[in-house]
Image 1 (cartoon, rainbow, N blue to C red):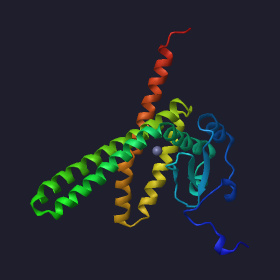
Image 2 (image 1 turned 120 degrees about the vertical axis):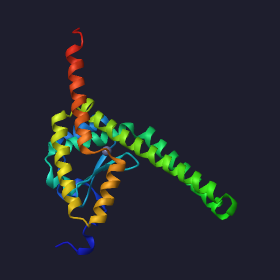
Image 3 (image 1 turned 30 degrees about the vertical axis):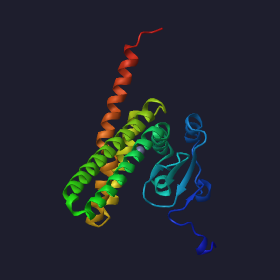
Image 4 (image 1 turned 90 degrees about the vertical axis):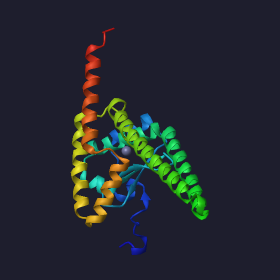
Length: 224
Ligand SMILES: [Zn+2]
């Protein structure tokens, strides 16, 4: 019996084999093709999670994801994450710059607060810039998600149908997760999810539209 002290902590990231998980060869081939340096690590949580670490060299998948989805579904999530890795550099930097500006303005805001004559101007300007930065962050974050979806469909050869099935199922599971939370917590989580990600319905309809356009272009392309 394993010592309790050596049980993996929830936040700990481990190799899939340490959780008795074997990564399907389709997924390994996909990673090999687009980002051979990327490793898959597994997070021990029953929630469904798939994300890329900021360093862009690790895709994190949760044990919950492996329990609830087939390998062909997990491939869709991995393809989406590879899209983030491929596009990340540029957008991550822009986001960071924006947070830098926000931090700087918060500083100005505080200075203004201490000097009573400038209070209203500093508050007003600070608030305006914070709102602008938040709005821009949301926009960039949504564009990142759409780009990663586009990558999955156009480069990683995921079908629109597979994307639809996979994300619809994820949507239902996430909805159940929200329902199990306290009302306030679930509302905050939902708002946060909508801040960083477009709704699943929007993403699915975009992917179908993309698929249609690609098919149309293929049919319309002159044969060589
Ligand atoms: Zn994403």
